[in-house]
Image (cartoon, rainbow over all chains, first blue to last red; front, side, top):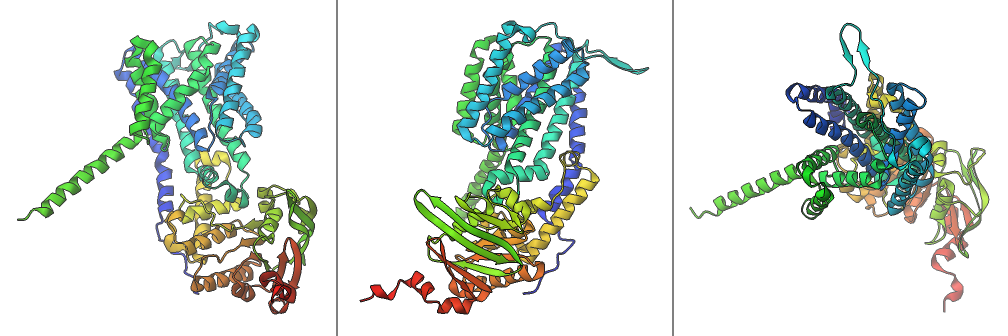
Length: 350
Length: 257
């Protein structure tokens, strides 16, 4: 048997993907610039607020979906968002830290909790992991409610200071007195989070996460420490979600235990399923569409969950791949129609 | 030099002894066959060595180190990598990506550099890609590199399984029925490949296989087990002439009329 020398010029699919990856940073920068132009056009505080809320919900939802994609039925996203919010508020208000230190610290604290919870529980599959994480979230909620000191009890914590002003001498001062300032902070957080998740999925780490999902026995046999990888994904995603939670606290100036109930995770799960979890963009589409729909129906807030459920049922029945699968489906239907057209032509006796 | 040694290893499933007080020595660099009728305990032996099962008694020594009870990924890190009886791949991944996953132990990629996608990280990725291609070439799989593993014909899936294992740079390969379901041509090719793996890289190979002709052609030494007990050991020609072995496979004369 002769050995075939590898042809250095052979452009495999993988090499092409690698080349494309080197450009992806530009796309994220482009997205930042594009969305950064919005406040120039959109002067309404209300619309800016909707967009800001959308940005941090996109962070919650994409990090949540990433954990789902490692094969774990996570149901405690609210726990880690809550840890992030409470940790950063306490660090700022009690320990006198700057927001700019407290936010990453809150992320690290949440990641630490994720490691603590992750090692014993990530070996559980399906509903068992869901129950544990849900239980963890609600236990935390009861702790916030029970202890007025330092968590503020059922009423929560108010008069939370905004982020500390940043001054670039002689250029500008960003003091977070305007919505636009928050808008850019939320946008930057979202873009950075999306980039990190994107790289995590496209790099060798994504390859290993996928391999664990495809065949965990074989993955172990080639020396992959499955538990470490699962904990890594869990901790990084929880930490990023917690940083968004910290932003939320300092943006709304008020947090209460009710903000971090399981309802938050249920919303995220609905965004993920409605948007389609197969693809990264799906969950973003799901979040944007449902949150916009929520704003349209804002006058009927009692019916919001009803509307979300209706959406969910319709999607599950007619679009199991989520909204993101719609364009692909339409083009396929289109090409089928063309085929039919062609057949008619062929069958024409003339 | 003895590379792997099982000392009086037993594994019970309930009251049933899948292997009982089994002794086994594997020499560095040999190709050794582990044969026996169905249910003799061959796969259990593999599972005990790789840490997928913890033996009830006895020790597994690899290169002088007691590896009994280590977890599978730790055993792989020490240099013992196995393949499975049923085709086990990452089905949705392309052949190339399958091998890339197999290269895990050789890939030293940190989290930060992967996120930042630095130049040195890109070089490392490219290097891994070239290694994966080289392994695919070694198995003559380069033409199907971008094909999802689940779409490959059975013979190629078997080869890919061994390719993944080889990518993990083992010191010892445990092959569980690598020739099952292959046509005679593919069997010959696989035998040649296994020999090349040993000759080129000095990797010890332990084979469990039912195809006797192939085992006799491939292995330098054969260990026969039945009901979890070693009943014979020796060169292929000795094993073929061994009365006990014939009995184990065909039953003894006493039952004949």
